[in-house]
Each structure stands twice: as structure tokens, then as C-alpha cells.
Length: 409
Image (tube, rainbow, N blue to C red):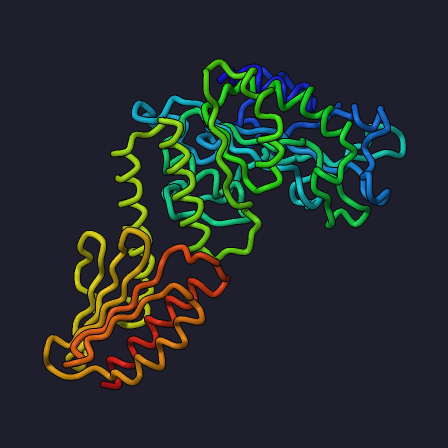
């Protein structure tokens, strides 16, 4: 990865700052109140060529502008620029979003590039979050949608990616005058898209030389697949891997988001041979423990007496002769209730509850020891085939109901 030329591309070509870019560091940015230096110039090629207006709605035009960021920037932002990176992955990894979104005044600042004409470049260091707790960087911390800076911080530290680069495929966002509504790139004038690819994105590909591109969202993925031949010619190795991930703004619960992204990134890193199969299995195991830790905290908050966690399961102490455990299996969670032969469980209650659960989790499986009614097992796949916003709440609801039934017995 050519970090010096990437810095030049972002901070002297795409955006031009009133400072010596070669010496410009995140420390300078921090001293300036977490703001970039004064912008003196920016890319206005599409405006000059008259292709900056939305093809399908003339009320929309290019307004916002971002830039790329890399691992070094995030290490500086979290105060960990001097940590030992000897066991981090050297391979170059690209995380790619579609384009800048709504014109949030907390991020973008007005710049008059021509009398009476304004654009809104970022005044923040793009894709960074300055409120992250440096001690909580690994999965599942910050593994959530919408907060891109926190999420990318978590990705870098979880998978130890020494040379990760994050950027938008198209550097300018298209907004209406309200600045809150925006368009996707298939609604741009296609000459505008071509300009950005030719002048910036293809240069980034050459400078980053990624082994894998993670495309965040199907629009980005389809566009990259459409220009895959061109990208392949620009990289210095025989094969480039392209992996689609959900868009961070998709409406997923925290657990759904964590599982889809965590497993998707692991698969991509393994397919591209950045991590080995043994490392993949270790990451999967660690991910399961993290999920169980979240459930354990919830159980303790609800007043459950919990035995010491063991490998991939948590068990409760008995209440009225009944105990239960939650086990993180290969592809899902198993809830197991048992009475140790002391007394019968409320079999009819679980039959009714099963009907409710199956509506939320269509692929759930309930097994009941009908003869002596000594145990009941509920298995729920993770993530569900058709994720819903109620997923995480529903799991916690089952735990709440469990406490009720154990106390009721």
C-alpha cells in the first residue's frame, strides 16, 4: 500500500488543504479541534463538465464530499499508533462504501468553489470516530450499523489488519437543497460516475493494491463486479477477491448485524488466504464467547444466579428445582431447561410458548421429553433466514419468560 501517495490523492487532489500535506498528521488534526485545516480547493470536474446534476431529478446535485482513510489513521485516533503490530496481517484490504450520504452539518462544511456555488466537503477525518473507548476496540464493541467510525475501528483491531483502507466508490454525495435526502449512484449522470472512477477510484486501486474488496451494500457490489476486469488489471497479483456485506444502514438488530458482518468478514479473509482455516475457527470460537458474554450480562441484570461460564455455554443455578443453560452451537443458540428429575416442567406452558416462538423464528426447533417431562430444548438459528428487528429482543424475552416459569414452578 502506497500510503504517501494515497495521502496526496486525498488531501491534495480530491481536497486541497492549506497546509503542508507531507507533514500533516492526525495529531495536527486533533490539535485543531478535530477539524481538517482550511480547504482551499476541491474537485469540481463534474460541475465544470455540467454532469453534476441527477439524471432523474434536477433538484439533486453533487453536494457532499469525503475522502479515504486507513489503518494508521484509526490507530492514531485511538491513541494506539505505537502498539506492537508484529502479529498483524500485512495484506492490503479495501472496505468500500457507495457514496457520501445526507449532508450532516456535524461532518460537512460549506465551501464556495465558485461565486454563488457551494459544495460541502467533510471537515472531519472521514470514517473515524473520536469518541471510541481505546480499551474497547475488538468485537463485538462498535460492531453495529450507522456508526461507521466505530465499526471500522472494531474491524481493524478484531482482525488485526495492518493495511486496511476505507473509501467511497464515488467521492461526492448527491443531495437536494434540504441536504437530508440523497441519491444512489445509479441515478447519477453516468459521466459523473466515470469521472470519479477514472480520476480517483482506479488510482486508489493501484495505490492500495487490495487482495480483497469488501463491498458494503448490493449497489456497490454490483458496480464493482461490473468493472472487475478493469480492477484485476490494476492490481499486482493474479486474483482479487470481491465479497459483499450488508449495507451498514440496513435495519438489523445488534446481534444480527454482528453475526452477518463478523461471519462475512471471516469468510472473506479466509477465501483470500489472509487468514488460515485454523485462524478462522479460532475467530468463530471467540465470536461465540463474545455473544454469550452479552447474554450473561443480561442474565445477571435480570437477577439470575449464573455458574461460571464454560467454553460455549452458560448455565444457571437452580430456582425451585429447575435450571437451564444457553449453548452457542455451530449455527445457533440452544436453550435447555431441565429439572434434574426433581419435578415436572410445565409442559403445557411450553407447548403454548412454542407457537409464539415459531412465529418469530420460523426455523426454531423444540424438543420436549414428554414421558417424564424432565427437559425441554429450544434451538434458534443465528442469524435467522429472514432477519427481523425483533430478533435480539425476542431472545431476551425468552430469557425473561424463563425466569417467570422457573419462579412459578
